[in-house]
Every structure is written in C-alpha cells, then in structure tokens.
Length: 395
Image 1 (cartoon, rainbow, N blue to C red):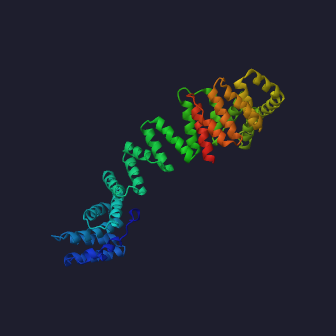
Image 2: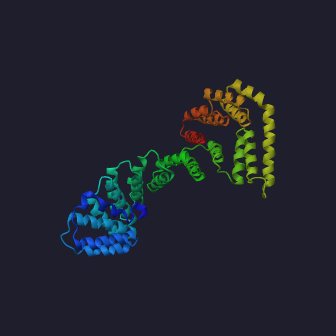
Image 3: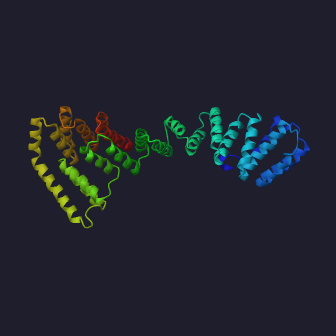
C-alpha cells in the first residue's frame, strides 16, 4: 500500500530479528504462515490473506505467534486493499509491544492512513494524535490531522490547528478561508485572504479582497479610484467600461497623466479602440491629451497659488499628477507639504496617495513607511495595507 509506506515484504523484516527468531512457532502456525509470506512476496496478497485464515482456528497462540501472524496479515491485507482487515491487524501489531522503537511510529502512521482511507475519521484522528504524541514534528501527520478534521466536519478543530501554524501553504490557507466562510467569520476570512494575497497572489484573491473592502460599512466612495488603481495593478481590469471609468476618475482628480496611461493600457489590451464605442474611446483619449497640455501650461501658476494658500488638497493632487507624468522630483515635495499641512479634506487619503506616489517613483522603503502610517476607518488603512502587500511581494 504505497500511500502508507508499506509493501508485502515489510513483515519479513521481523523474522530476522534475534529477539523473536529463537521463539518456537508451532507447525500448524508456521506452515501456513510461511506459505502466506511466499504468496505476499510474489504479489499474491489476497491469497496470502486467505492462507492466514488457516491460523485463526489454532488455539492458545503465543504472543509471538499472534504477532507474526498479524504482522504478515497487516501488510498483505493493506497491499490487497482489504483495509478493514489491515486495520485490525495493524492495531494488534502496534499493541503487541514487540515493535522496535524505529518501527512503532511507522506502523502508527500507517494505521492512521488506513483509517483515513476507509473514512473512519474518529479512529483516524485517534491514531494521528497518537503518532503526533510520539513525534510532534511530523508535518505529514499534522497535515493529515487537519485534513481529517476538515473532511469530517470538525471545522473549529481544523481552524485551530491551521491558525496555530505560522507557515501555511496555499492549499491550507484556502482551507482556512473556506472554514471561515462556513462559520461566517468575515473578519477572519479577510485576514486569511490578505495572507493569501501576500504569499500566493492570484487575481481572484485580489478581486475578493477589493470587493469586500468596498462593501465594508463606512467605506468612502471617494476612494473608488484607489480601488481601481489596485485592480489595475493586479491585472483585474478587462472591460472597456472599467478602463473608461478609471480614466475619467483620474481626469476628475486632476491627474491627466494617469488617465493617459490607463487609456493606453486599455488600447494595448484591446479593451479600448474597438467595437461600436471606438469613437467614444478616441474622444476620451483626445480629452486626456488636451487636459495634459492644459495642465502643463497652468501648472507653475497653480502650484504657486496652492503653496501660497497652503491648500493641502491642491498640493497633493498636483504632486500626484506630476509623479504620474514622470516628474517625481517636483511632485513628491508637493505631496510631502500636503501631508505635513494635514488640513486636507481627507488627510489619511493624502498619505495613502503619497505612499503610492513614492512607490511609483521607485522609493520603496519610503513608500512602505508612509503606507504604514495611514490610519482611518473609511477604507484608507485597508487600501494602504493592500499596497504594502503588493510592494512586499514585488520584492
């Protein structure tokens, strides 16, 4: 039985043991036992199990005779797929006290695997726990315990084991998320999604995260563009309407350079510039280019006005637009001023944008520091944390 690490030859190892070779085996036991060994060695495991039945009627077996019979039966039955018989035989061998210290955990693990295979989950759990008691560091048994808890509907127990593990693989994180959904643990589910996004980022994980942050009570609709920025960064934009909406929001935010990049990306992906709305797409593209020209013309004067008036929102928006246009040396200082003023309509959103702009400018360490400082319950802190996940994964 490859799944539990035993073959038909496994029982033969015990017969060479000095501890038991000297013990007498009666002929009525020894003859069918040896024939069963030969059958198992030849791969005729069903026949071996049948041959061993001849020993069942022999009375007054010694402990050694029972051990040798059941050890042979355990391996042959497991290899033959007769798991009920194998389970009883394995239990007998394990409880005999005759296994060596090296063999004991192997047989315990094998029995746990058999019970799992025949879907006797309570007994599987019992023997897995016994195996872990002997070897707490057995990762294979620990994984089997979690899987057994889960498949048998013991969700709290499975979740407890998963949450106690620091380094979960992708499948285990998915299992934990599934359990949390079943238990309606929304907060826990989002935390697990964040762990999945950090270690095993996939479009669907990010889509779920961003959908849930927008659905949170108190989420500010003024952050819609920021959600779309994360969607774009994680490859989630595909529809023409999405590219159109994001570019229009960027224009409304006073960032024509960002709008131009979004539109160009839409054209590159084939989402824009085709179909019945191609002319509309072109008009938006022309508008973005025209707005950028106007921005460049007025930028110096509007910057001076914003600095004079200590207008945090104007400084932040202009700074972000300059960074988007590749002028980080001019844009980041303006955004820094806006952060220090702290008088914008949403100071936390200004810090969020400053951190994103720093990341665009390639200043990762500064970006992570800024994003870490973002607070707020309107979604800004969540979005800052998600940008941090992306930046750390990019490393």
